[in-house]
Picture 1: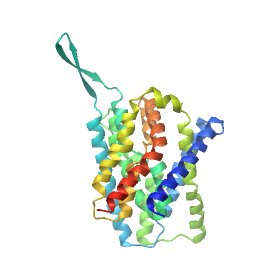
Picture 2: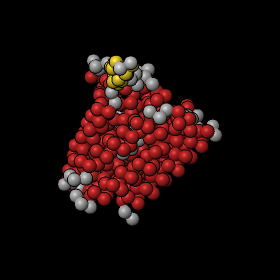
Picture 3: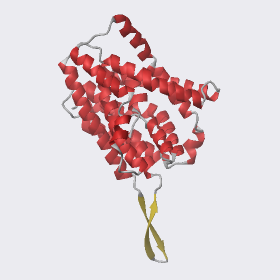
Picture 4: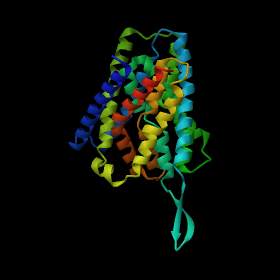
Amino acid sequence: MSTLSILIEQTLSLFIVITVGIICCKAGLIDDATNKKLTNILLTVMQPVLIFNSFQMEFDSGLLKGLLISLLLAFTTHIIAITISYIFIRRKRRKVVVTGGTRTVTYKINHDAEVERLTSSYSNMGLLGMPLIHGIFGNVGVFYVTAYVMTFNIFMYTHGVIMISGNKKIRLGDVAARLKSPALIAIFLGLIFFILQIKLPNVINRSLDYIGSIYTPFGMLIAGATIAKSNIMEVLTKNLKIYYIVFLRLLLIPIVIMLIYVWLPIDETIKTIAIILSSTPTTTIGTLLTIRYDKNSVLAAEIFAITTLLCVLTIPLIMFIANMLMKYA
């Protein structure tokens, strides 16, 4: 089975689990408090375990080289996404009004510019991207995804926080505290164990495998419950401006990244992972930051909901085009 076929099958499977999460929320089985607790379990236990266990492999210099390449691509991906968001989302919008033959130029302030830039720049590489990659490439895929998780945290808690808060004098202590996340700790510990070839006993390794295997369905249930908080039909029809942000996040940014990466003389798996991760919907952390800094959190949640639903169509489309181009690369 081709990578594209596996991707389509995996994406549809995740969408079904997301649907189950929506149903559970609507039925009252998952309320806001439960969803918050499930998210904490996912981010503090399951994701770090899955990440750490992906490093429990035989040392291979090729894997280490691939990880460094992935780290470079991760930084490049974020820089490209942020640049595109600033180019296509303006703080001031120019408007020309012609009255009685007189041409007047006015400027309208876009008060949601920061929210729109944040939700278009930062994708859901951890919650949705990692399960996709794990389903297609297994632990080797997760191994490479760790480079993106680390880079995402660095950019989100520096550039992302500065942009959404408007405070350019962000304290290094606050950033350092944010970077002490369980996922990043798991990455550094896992890398040390990988380089020094410290192997866990089989019984522990198997137990970690069991915990890590729950990550994907758990994460999709949470995504579904989060989406269920929005009136999907109303969101899909009431604010057509959202589709501009959806276009940036799900199509323009990944297409630009794809057109750059497909021609790189590097391992195809590494390229594929980079393109898939760039195609994932907007991050849930963006919504949390908008709440914390009193921005338009409703808009952020709506963008998350729509991009998460529509990525079922756009990710396979992006990868179909990428696969066609890779044949000629």
